[in-house]
Image (cartoon, rainbow, N blue to C red):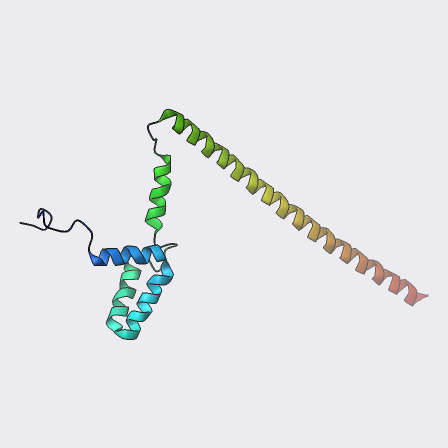
Amino acid sequence: MTALSDPAAPSHPGWLYRAEAWLDSKGKGAWIAVMVLGFVFFWPIGLALLAYMIWSKRMFGKSCSRRKTWHSHMSAMKPSGNSAFDAYKADTLARLEREQHDFEAFLKRLRDAKDKAEFDQFMEERARANREEAQDDDTGKA
């Protein structure tokens, strides 16, 4: 009889899986801390953790729980089966997308206005310096 068909086999995942899930929930810093502790206490453990982190792309990925966030975004797009709620959700998502677009356009206008103000200030300072230089040249000739 295999462990999968054994009714007495535990239904919860093993301690390694639970430890991995716990570290994932704490983030990349927890993985690095455990790896450093592994190097401090027994270097092969630290080396094994480093190899695992590189192999599983935990070391260089944006987040340890990248798969969870992708799944949560995809579940938001699934229909619930309730047409009224699905229509409300679609309207809300469309409104949020419009608001995000409007906010990004607002930020662009702010950046453009700031850039223009800085450029105008630069040109005014440059013109003032040129006027002062011209006045100094005129007074020096007289």
